Image (tube, rainbow, N blue to C red):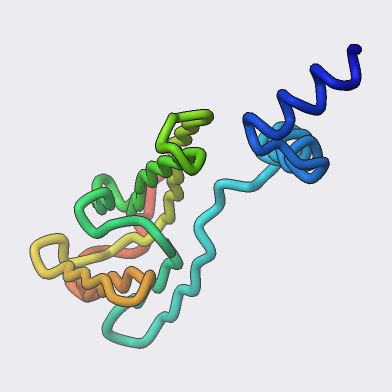
Length: 142
């Protein structure tokens, strides 16, 4: 009798053996998945070019700030997953919100001339160098 009830519930909710492993792996590995922005930083005599991968994050959910010599890139991605059976009855609805942030120390920059663009999941930030800023400061010893 118990097997018939379980079998009927499996058919009603369209549960497969793979659903168990999907749920198990999602719970196990989501906690260890790195929320890390992969970045390339190029330096020339005149500027820094930062290329940061933010795939799947909409442009409006990305923030770029520069303060006290630190460039900060952050973003959020929300994923909504909805599964319905053939009759349209909701049987599972899941949501996840992922936030990422990285900071980079890039000093001697012309703050008013920083430019950023976003295309195909890659954020490009150009930071022109300020040659007038003093790189080293001598401190006299008393």
